[in-house]
Image (cartoon, rainbow, N blue to C red; front, side):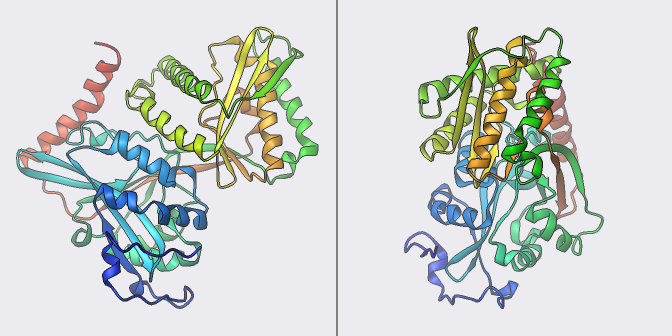
Length: 420
């Protein structure tokens, strides 16, 4: 789909363009524009959506996810947008949606940081920048597949202090399948000594293209699920009757389910003493409701409930984006015996069957939990990449600010969450 750059707003229109052949265009021929206001962010929507379709990105890089995250987690007087766009003539071929955060001491700026929208988001940017929690499963730079080498080369040239004005760039949630890991990182290593990607977590998934997930082999997974249940203490009978009902078109139930989901995650994290988990943040519910509305309107929701004679046993709210399912909202409480009953396995098998029928190639899971234990077929790794663009000046105000950041992260937030 060819997109025409709008006549108002974008500085790019002041330039005479040539549509380049992607096989012959050089990195220096790409036009680079930076957008730093919310109006430009919003104006990019249709170009952003077109590029994510071409790049087949994960849901976390969709315009809708990024816009919602910025509205609920990003906005702060100490933050500003820094969205880098790369154009081949009038065609958007690369998008690096950064924002900047600043630590200040009075009128003195101590440090300016850059990271991708969707990561970080502490309420106190001055002190809370050590708090790197992230609700986005994986983050990346969005690139047209025909331009990956060209865009990587151009970005490696411009990600420096003189262009960005940032002292440091941190890429959070960089997975081993990403453009950053596969194309940008090797080029950055030529410009920065001793940089590396630090592994932060491992994310399980179902590969729907593998033989064992074809429809004729689903029964094997049923047996695996039953074998798991037989090891669970006090599990209800495996042969209970239950009914699976599609409720993806009922907004009232969807909104209610978001409340249940957050409550269950809070209980789970509290039980594990992971008190800084983002589900305790009062902005999280607003973000999820806002984004799920987008998903509801775009028909990205797969939402079903398994119901038995005792009531609602389990529910599963899946987001579909670019032929991938994202298991972000499954309501399977480890505190409830009902969650360990057969309907939990049955509901997940129903999801796999629907995925096969609808050409889904992967189900990315919230975590390796009891109800999906028999269905994990692979993992990808997430990591953190840090680029120091400018040598830090360790003066007394900077050191005081860093000390306050540590106190904020490890003392104040923990005490607040405990109600102390």
